[in-house]
Length: 73
Image (tube, rainbow, N blue to C red; front, side, top):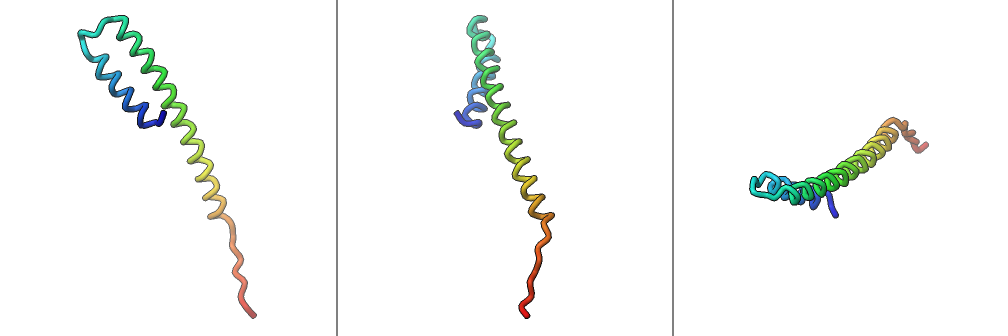
């Protein structure tokens, strides 16, 4: 499941939970499903943050590298 799909499902769950006529047991079940989806989304965000940090560090190392320019004699 993609991050976007998770967010869409969380949005649907949130809208359903706001429905006052929802039976209690169904609400509790949906709430639990929402928590699991939220955990997945947080894990995906942490993974993305790690990847971005690695890429940024690599870019910083490249920028700090001194390049020698050889002139033809």
